[in-house]
Image (cartoon, one colour):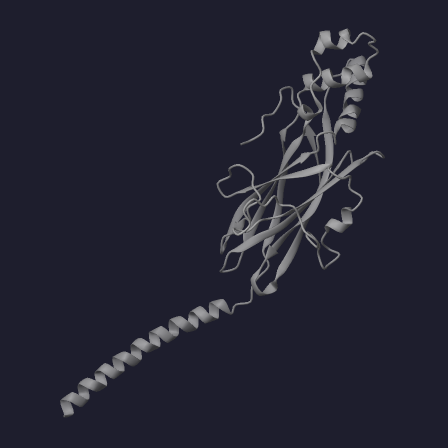
Amino acid sequence: MRGVFRSMTVVSLLAVLGGCEILQQVAEQNATSQTPPQMPSVAYQDAILVESPSKTMMAAYYCPQLVPDPTGLLCMGFFGVPPSPAQMRVSFDLRFKVQNPNHFPIPVAELLAATVVFPDKTNQSLGAACIAFCGADQPGCTGQPGPGACTAKTNDIKSADDFANAAAGFLVASGVTYLTGGKPSFAMPQVVQDGEITVTARFSFGPEALLGVLKQLAQQAVDQYAAGKTVEFIIPYRIEGGVWFDVGSLGRVALGYGPVDGTWTIPADQIIPKQ
């Protein structure tokens, strides 16, 4: 009986020790899950021009409007047939570096971008676009924001309401790419746990949104040419906005970026949109 008792004691002790290891693992998991969630960070990288008319297209489109030519043959003889307004589209990519210090992935819920072209001019043009990203259970979602989208509870973060005077249709969102890139979509990006991703959001100016602005550039080009200077087509801009995340028990949080100033230079050859 004494030997049986010893065997039962050893088995019981091993069971207890095994149970302690399991309890320790559970405790560690609970401690991890109970760690207060931390705020992610957003770092604006740049705004890259990815589509625009060429200088030749600019000249062909605006020459009849700026150069006295009753017959219309002079401009066409120099620059060819004017392109359509749709061919004069300008698009750019906004890039952000997003870091997630949490031990769980966090989704990017919404993104707001507001762009002013020619910010130092009195006739500046403002456009704003809010993207509401789509979950896996929303097939066919187009990223259109619903009521209350892209709004912040603090005045430190720009909200959609701050750009209520933006021209309708001036700025249009085309979607985002992240991780390995690819064609822009409105699928909700996930920032991996304890990691970072680069989110690239593409925006285009509406079909005829920039025609008036580009006409200013064309007029400047005429003046530069008449003065014997090198003709340049440069669009100054200012960009700002915010990014919204769903961060566990913190709920939906917003981080702002900008305002950031820069310039886009229309190249000699047309840029082909990235696929």
